[in-house]
Structure formats: C-alpha cells, structure tokens
Image (cartoon, helix red, strand yellow):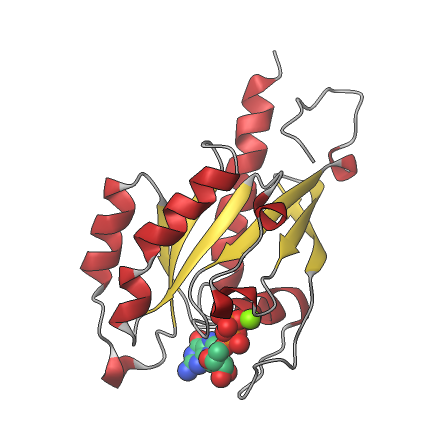
Length: 186
Ligand code: GDP
Ligand code: MG
C-alpha cells in the first residue's frame, strides 16, 4: 500500500494505490465511484450503496495498475471519518457540490483532516461535482480553480449523473501517483 518504488522486474499490476473519497455528505462521492467502477448512477442513494472500497483495474501508460478506491459509506454525516480511513492513502478526491456553496466552504476542513491523517504528499484533486445542475450553480468554475491553485491541487468539474469527467478525475490522480513512482526508479 505504501509508495514503494517500482522496479523493472516487478509488475505494475502488483501495485495497489489506495485512493480516498472525501467531502461533505450528499456531494456525490458514492455516485462518482459507482459511475467510475460500475457505470451506474443512483438517483436516490443514501444508504443503498455502502461499499467500503472498490478495486478498479486501470491502464496507465500501457501498464495495468489497481486503484483501491475507498468510500466513506456515510461516516461523514456524523463528522466521524476515522483515521483508519485515511491511513495509507496515496491519492484523494476532495469533492464538493457546485450547487451547494456550503460544501465548497467545507473543503478547507476536509483538506486539514486529510493532511492530519495521511501523508502530506497524497496526490489530491479538487472535484466540483453535479455540473449537470447548471441552473442552481452556486460555485463558479473560476472559484474552484483558484482554490485548487492556492492549495496545489489538481482540479476538475464532474457530473456523476451524465458521466462528464468522472473517469478523467480518477485517472488524473492515478496517473500522477504512477508518474511519481516511475520517477523514483533510477
Ligand atoms: P455522497 O453522500 O457524497 O456519497 O453522495 P451520493 O453519491 O450518495 O449522492 C447524493 C445525492 O446526489 C444522490 O441523490 C445522488 O443521486 C445525487 N448526485 C450525485 N452525483 C450527482 C450528479 O453528478 N448530478 C446530480 N444531479 N445529482 C447527483
Ligand atoms: Mg456516500
């Protein structure tokens, strides 16, 4: 699980990258994972999708790697995401809902929590989800971008509903983790 160097004789598919989904309740974390891993969407999810984590094979630069993506399964409703959830994570998707400003305002707190419980170098993407809700947008793309730049995070806006950028958001994180590991190989 740790950021071990990739040796030539070791196969990339032997590596599991732990990625965590973080953010307020109902921003669409579980649905981003459902869309990414199973190409499914749940219009009225709450407790319906209680997966703890899902392992997804991905092809990065022609190599097969496995992303083990963790979902809070509702823990965040009680502001009680355990430190075990973050432990060993090498990547994170920090998710807010572009139609609810309050979820964007929470991002700083989630970022602190992530940095408290995991490695400071965890590869993180800020994700503004629900772009399909154009008419009720409360957070502009520029605001999201600015926060990401200030905090040195990747940034993308997604819609789990219409699939926009969902694969790209996960791939951005996994590719960067892979690149960091590859660069360490001399
Ligand atoms: P979580 O609590 O962060 O895991 O959020 P969920 O994945 O359970 O989603 C919360 C609610 O938002 C559900 O009713 C989803 O159907 C809805 N939802 C999730 N993603 C999107 C999206 O991209 N667009 C829209 N319109 N609704 C979404
Ligand atoms: Mg959920």
